[in-house]
Length: 364
Image (cartoon, rainbow, N blue to C red; front, side):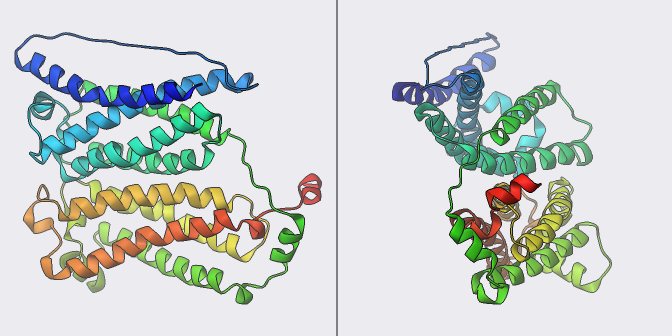
């Protein structure tokens, strides 16, 4: 593929702006049209044979997703009354879940973070580079977003309002699962001299002060993760009740998204922290770098949505974070978001401790 193809995808995504405006105007005037525009460009990329068809399919998928990401950004901007007349019909007659604080923050995450990820993966495919790392980050974000959104829709106050749009959403999930599988099939490239691997394996944890700090962080993060899960489960402990009342009353919101979010985090992040502790203590866990990338994407999506919805005006006042508690709330949640990324950076830039020598892999 040429650079012009990647530029074309970027321009296609921007076409969602006039598309939304036209679509909204047509429905408001009670005139319905359906426009289906599909374009396929096929060019050879180096000497790739088997992966060429998959790359083309992924290229098309990410191009469509980039288009939809800009649509989601438009939805978020119109919900905040920054723009008007683009998706008014959809907000009134479409999916009711999108009007919740959680759905509102999802629109911004899809329109900004996911949009950037799609453009980066499209650029990597265009130039024949590996997109495995950014793809794994997107996998974590997508999985966390999808699980919480579907379960929250099912058990929340809008659980009975399932429309045709939900079926379309499931189609989107199915295609995304296929894209996730293709990301994992991308070859992993990590060249580290054998001498560095041998030296790293002989280093004790107490001679790795940064890793020792990460061990302490993982224990604290596991405790905090389980604690918030218990709060979401309406634990009768005084600590849980006081925390929910003073710092995170949003966990009691009837939309059920925050409760599902905390339970999914406890069941997903909890085991992750235990496994990561093992990976920092025992050398040769070659899955560590990529696992931290996936988890970082999941935590970033979850925390962005949770922090934003906890403070957003669409959340009823009684469930918002009290003004006096906001500094502590922001400090704890921002640290809980950033530290996994720091750990991920350490594992990806200095992976020698987690790698195995070639002869060890052959024995297995």
